Image (cartoon, rainbow, N blue to C red; front, side):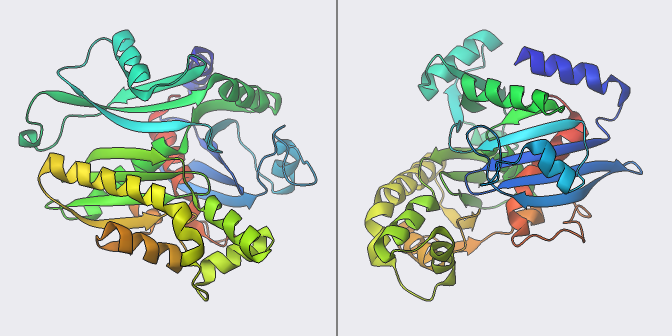
Length: 355
C-alpha cells in the first residue's frame, strides 16, 4: 500500500500535529460503527459515534443499499481522512516471537509470512515491539513482532471504494491491531506483579492477549465468535436474529447443553494457549478479562469460566482511553464499549499519523 501511504503523507503536510479531523469506520459483521475524532484547542476529542447497518458485499449498507455518502449526509458527518477496521473475518492477527536479533525488513517480512503460513495473495504488515521493560524476562535473545495479514483483493476493493466516495484513506487495518493497542494502554490499570489475560469475543473471531508485567507477551486470534452460538440458537429454537440476540444476552434460560459441543474446540485451544504462556513464563495468569460485542452472555461466561478454571471478569475497554476522551453526550448508542477499538485507532492516527 505504498500509494496509500504516499497519499497520506502529502495530505498531512499542512497539519503539523497530525490531521485536524479523522473518521474511523469499523466494518463489523453485524454493524458498521463510525467514530469521528477532532483536534480541539490542541487536544484530541471524540465528537461523534454512530452504529449503522453492516456493509453489504458491494459496500452499500442495509436492505436499502444506501451508499456511504448517503449515510454520512443523513447523519451530518464530514471528514477528509478516513481509517477503516475490516472486522468481517477476512484478516489475521498474531504476535510472533523469534529467537536472536531482528534481520533487515525484507528478511523479517519473509520470516513473518512463513510463520503465519499465508498465501501470496495476502498483504502482510508487521512491526517490531519494544524490548521487555523487565530485561530479565527476556532470557535468551529474542524479539517480538506484531503482524497482520489481509487478502490484497479486500484491501484494494476497500481502498477504491473510499476513493470513490471522495474520502482520503489513511489506514486499513484488521481490528486485532487496534484491540492490541487498546489492551496495551490498559497496562497501567493492572498490577505490574501479575500476568493478566484479555479475551475479546466478537461475531466471527476472538482474540486472546496476555500482558506480562505490562508487556504484551501473547496474542492469538481464533476463528470462533459468538456468531456460531447465535446461529445454533436460531436453528435450535426457530428464532430470528434479533430474538436470538436477546435470548443470548438475557441469561434467563440455560442453553449451555446446546452450545457446549460447538464451543469445546475453541475452549480447548484457549486452554492450550494459557497453559503455554504459564509454562514459558513460570507464573500463572492471575485473571482473564472478557470484553467485546459477544461478551454479554452469562451462559457463555459461565461455560468459559468452568473450562479454563481461572478468575474471569468483565472489562470495560473504554476505561483504557485517556482521561477526558469520553463518549459524546449527544450520541445515542446502546453499547458504547463496542466503539473502543475504533477510538483507539483514531487516537493513534491523530497523534502519530501514518498508514
